[in-house]
Length: 230
Ligand code: GRF
Image (tube, rainbow, N blue to C red; front, side):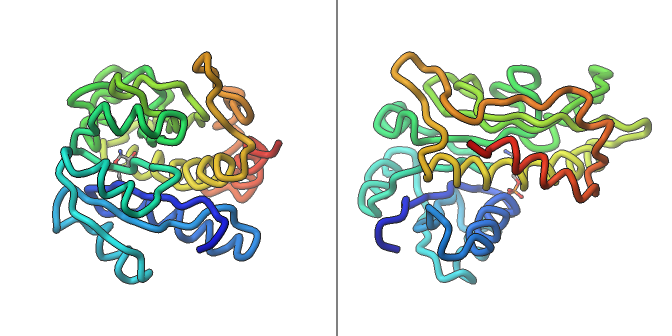
């Protein structure tokens, strides 16, 4: 893993977003600009750890006060939060400012913030009667779920949706957005400037995108690819 951006993925859940990043980087092969060098979970039962071990990637269980030290010890360049439910200390968000991102299963700043994670997000979207949800990839700063947005993609809310069916439709888009954001950051096609503005692929899909792209539509991938093309 020489010369490429060293990525740590922090995950407390099943790790499907971690898997999407691993699969995307593997598909890029020698063209990839990053490697996942470490997977950190808040608890041993995280499915993400099993996925990391299957891919022969270093793993760690980190409590908030040891997280910075573990990331430093593994010479991590880019931190990716993907369903990480533990607290990320300010010392880490400051030290990796502009190099720490998160994926959230809604269109931030709506339906984000403390207590809104996992199925709770989709339940809140349905209870609000929202017609559109989506996924957001954003830089992480000191304020939970409020860092500068890198990319978003809308996902339709269908009549009769349950939190689970909506979650599955949004997750499909998360799996497309997050790996491309990781690659664009590693490639330098995307960055956070000193004024806190996102430079590079900050396009937000035209809201009619979802009407053209049911999540199983093959051109969805091409259009999300285009979102990150310099
Ligand atoms: C994803 O929906 C992510 O947006 C949210 O938690 C879920 C993690 O799922 N933060 P997985 O562990 O990546 O499958």
